[in-house]
Picture 1 (cartoon, helix red, strand yellow):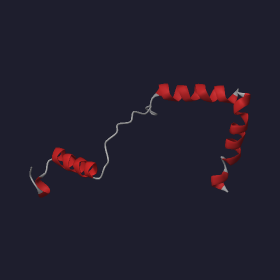
Picture 2: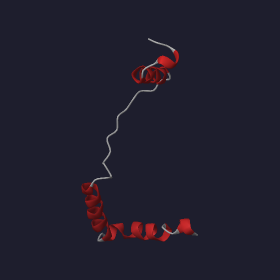
Picture 3: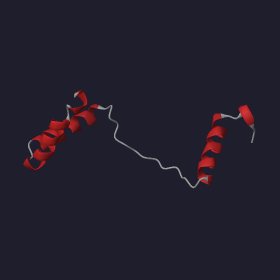
Picture 4: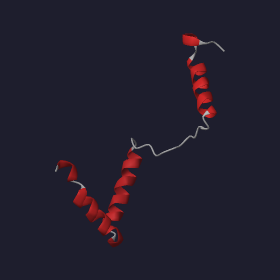
Length: 73
């Protein structure tokens, strides 16, 4: 494998991952919801409406409302 500045991106990635593995790490791929989609936004709205109507969630929502403006104090 070439050394120095003549490494291809693939070779650099290989070496980087090899160093991490020697340190006892391993790669993990995590899939998360795409927050840019309208579907995600719609699901957020749906869940927020459910929480707002839930007596069980009222203390939590009240707490969030109470601390929401702390950053401007």
